[in-house]
Picture 1 (cartoon, rainbow, N blue to C red):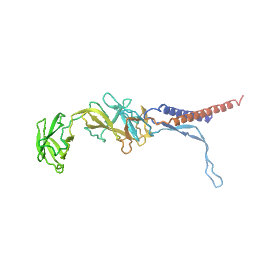
Picture 2 (cartoon, rainbow, N blue to C red):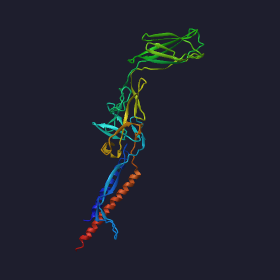
Picture 3 (spheres, helix red, strand yellow):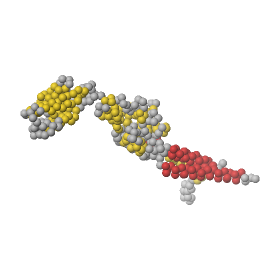
Length: 391
């Protein structure tokens, strides 16, 4: 039989594969995180019709005569170039700007993905659309151990920011030097104990001939003062403070100028327990929760993975990949650090398929298929001529 028949068949198979790959790319043009593939061909084994010979003193050398036996698919490569960003406005949607993959776990098996369209399940865990659990480093008391074991990222409304007792308060503003002796300025501060229970701390300033007397009392019965405040050029000495039980009230920022009374508590620590109200994500994947008590606390960090050879990853469906011997082991890290891209919340990465290129590939594959089909019909006509030599 003619070798051209089998060459044509190999061409049909190879270009059919190219059509399959191109069709899959076009089908996934709107798939978040999808990376397009391309086909590379190579020729198959060639049959030596005549061997070559080396040059002699009186005779020149000759080249080998070889007849190719067709084409085969050499590789189907994945293009991991960055896809365009699509704004979704959902805080759980994430996009990697640069290199790296999200890490997910399903049934105990880890996989990797570029698609960041995540949501919460009934347990408050961050999951992909197919139910895979997003992996990262959960925070313990607001601290993330980025070198520890990976775990599920959980963000739930039942999260609680622990209470903290008040240790200090800072006052600022002005006590008027031209006030009448005996005038009283009172300010209240809401403070907390270690269980988060609130109580009132009353601060009283009484005008005297030498300046002002400061005293304090809280609902637990602790009292302090009176402490004489003597202003020099309208200012108090550094370190001026009033101790009320376990609370230190810093008065050094007060001024004693003539005019308005603007004394106010500028800051104080301590808070009651609070539940999660909302969360934000930084470019390094750190999730920070805002709680009803006004506290901001880190609740976790999304982990990323990278590979020496991303092209060696195996596609396993659901826009996910699995590590192979060709890809190498995953290297874990934090977004924004060396070798890893930054994370952006409220966006997803779209497919990197270029439709103009894919339709061109579609035409090339179609014409290649037609040309190889022509090889078969031509070879068939030659065989028909052979069978008709004897009539």
